[in-house]
Image (cartoon, rainbow, N blue to C red; front, side, top):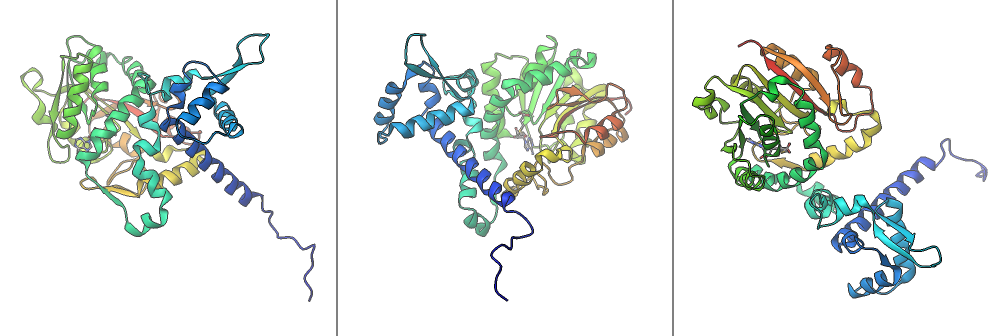
Length: 394
Ligand SMILES: C[S@@+](CC[C@H](N)C(=O)[O-])C[C@H]1O[C@@H](n2cnc3c(N)ncnc32)[C@H](O)[C@@H]1O
């Protein structure tokens, strides 16, 4: 039978077309941002520049003059909200280009809050982006083995920048509502990395002392932050929470345990064996406050991101810490519900659960199980929560 020219497939092509269109748009966005960061475009535009001045700069960098192309690049940056364009006076045809406040704050290398090192995948996750570009090679060569002692000293520099942009203050603002936290005199920041959480917690009580526990290589970096922020009540303890015990870090001033053990995004923070050691080192009536990613709470809206983060996560492995398949989970990691139950079994009372992303407390009704369940269905992107628990029984 002859083919019918009017015959169409059962499903339209739009989904496939959009998929490729979105992917190509993402690719172009990525490379344009990479270029801009590499050539410090947002620093260049900290002061307003005319198009002619930008064109001169462009040529000086060794790029072939092409005003239409340059103008298109600037248009794309305006669409991103990173550059703005405006007339300098009512009677002038001339416009100038300037970095927006957000670009100046986070994307200029001069800014105290510059996120360049933490955001730009090519600078910081160089290997990660390259692994995507050479995906075929990556899949052939197997996952990249990463030594914790060399990986974390770099990561914590990025995390210090990230948390100073807001999460550090948000966390402390939440924690300081708890009297027991405000009154804590002996504090341990487990896997504290840069130590900024420990430093900020020590501000809450001027009689407090805080120890930041981390791997020896990381503690060398922590000391620099302690010095930078002039925190003479904060010190470091080098160790490995898989092989060392926190009770061995107690001293004469708190031989019964810490008043407060805090931990943030600690790879062992959801591991029962590490939690056991934390419980053991918490004083009776002391607090354990733990901020963790619980990815099972990530909402449907972010399912694609979660799937892709999962690919990244499984492209590398640590030498000492065994990972699970789901991003930010390690061997034996507990879910949020499992974590809460585990702490209760260990003699802790849950005082608070806080969704970092929503900036809200989930258990104001004191029924945290119910609150957490209800929360599962909301539009959660990261699943990051702080759980505050008090040791009420030995
Ligand atoms: C993701 S960073 C979190 C840093 C900081 N707490 C924050 O939230 O910004 C994880 C930290 O855990 C530390 N860490 C990883 N494995 C460890 C281990 N086995 N013993 C002690 N610290 C460890 C790392 O060195 C790093 O500082």
